[in-house]
Length: 398
Image (tube, rainbow, N blue to C red; front, side):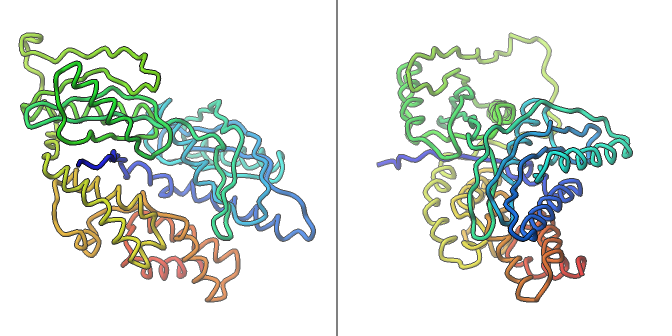
């Protein structure tokens, strides 16, 4: 019997750029400094009350949010990674943004205003165009990880998904539809398969592959690339217009399949030939390998400590699909072939913090080490590089 699981893909490269920019590091340093100041005040009951977000300085336009309410109860180190992601996703959706972004929290409105003025001045001195956007994360939630609290929107925004399934001659694609969270839903496959059977008489032999993205813009871009890849390789791609709808009231409007006669002028060749869609056998291989990847990660003491194993599983699946690879699982890790930046978990900061504490570094030096280590490790997210990156970070911060 076919497993009732739906696999998802999420590109990694774009999701890690936010930690590679000096501007984001500056914001992160502010968070640490403000938190330590609050802790240092004897008997202080102050928490963070205001915040703002901004994009990195590596693009011609720098985006700033308004100052927003950000009341927190945390009295320990604060991570704004969930908040950073929410702001970046907004920029991607609204402005087709392709760089990094970061957020900072402050004890008072005056502190937030002063810091924002300083960052605006830096952007202007760098010759950047300033664009202030009307973005607000809404109510915030706090999730504790060890001695750190991650702050982000209390109501996660919807994700965006499309599904595809087919055979050697024809691939059927859904339209992009709103979804909740980043976990697959078996109902998508059931509904899509039922629709294909009724509409096209197609009986799927495997479950659909569903791709989940943070923004509609990214999901539609990837869907377009997948469709183009199928057609470039002389196969039929049917854009069915189907969307998952729990109420069953949505009426699909399929896009017509292009015909040679529709355009007498041949289209220009693509600058880079899209990769052929993975073969059905490879798709099945990568899907069945999922539990093995989870088991491998959970049994490895360092992998399971530093990375989220479910996201490691997704990263391996994405690598298989992108490179058409069926090489042994262990070699993907020992030869550092799979980029695991998108699977980094909170254990990474804890590992750095513990090593810094064991060496007797002050909070200020420890915070510097953590930030420099994070930037370098996201660029080379491999276990074998951790000690080397840590030593380099210590040398830079001493």
